[in-house]
Image (cartoon, rainbow, N blue to C red; front, side, top):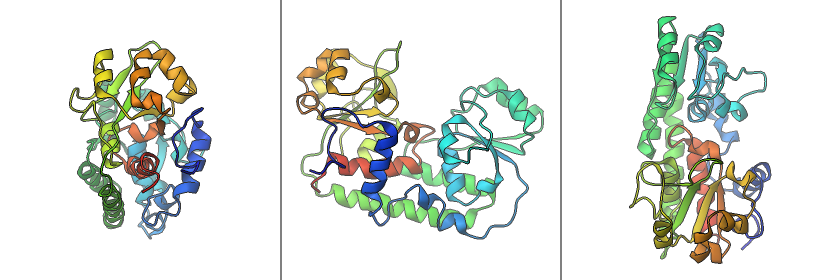
Length: 310
């Protein structure tokens, strides 16, 4: 097991370095949709200049706009998209807590977001000011993602590029499925959402975390017990007996290793994950706004982390 694909045993890799490792490890995957491929070849396709000024509210939306080659239409993005655009592109706050005044001041033609975009009062004020408010599909399946690509492509007039992008995604998903055919004993992977001051939650069904775990060839034991992100009892977690604990890279800022996690959640000591120091990390931006392009990337990467010998 090499160090790029093994579980994090002594400490969690910090997010910037983790992403660097992931890029080095997976650039060789032929059909893996890397960050650079979001801009090539689709983004280099010739497109008709468009005077539309778009604000993108959500990383899952912004990555599609970039992948379609429509980034020249962006005049601002929300903070979840800050790593997807140039530093000089204005950031308008969190996509769930947008301010109408700051958005209107940018004079956009439209704002595109998922059903997570809000609050409703802000959206109503934007509509009253003559700004188009487009809420696109935010579902958790690959078909939902393909539909969202079609929606964004229509809004940006990049329908031709959408066909190529959808084919890339479909091929990547099929590649992951082919790898999963060789797994005789799928790992049980439990995603924990940990925020200071809030109860610890697990990702059940109808969550992006569940979709990523499933695409990566593992079983989410919480999916049969709860829907969405919900707190769950100690007894239930013990019953699940996860092989791997999956955390967002935002959590790893405060929890560095399994010992710290067990200190916070003592019941985990009786699970295979704790006994084997099996923690994996998912990029938190891949969990925002429904299953997205980066979510597919993370599923591919985590497949290799969960099953390094495949």
